Image (cartoon, rainbow, N blue to C red):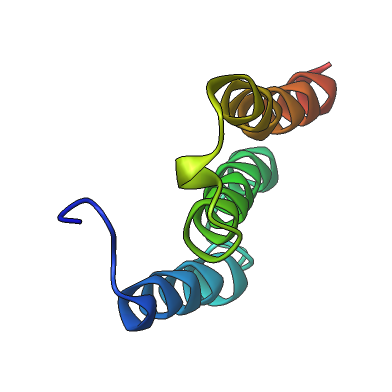
Amino acid sequence: MLTERPTWMTWGLLAAASIVTTWILSADSVDRRWALVAIFVVAAWKVRLVMTDFIELRRAPLLGRLAFEGWAVLVPLTLVVLLWQ
């Protein structure tokens, strides 16, 4: 299928996201709240990559896919809202 990423590309994306969150966003040059928001977003994106590419939820039934996609959006959003209160 044309929409599927090769495994090596997914690993590369995960590694790059880890580098961004570890080395760039943890530096003191970024405001802590904004860095945490970015880290939550990157972490949610990484979870989504793993779930769709390695656990193969990309081909899951619609209800399961909606539950997963909703979780991948609602959990980081909830954390960001709690952070800004």
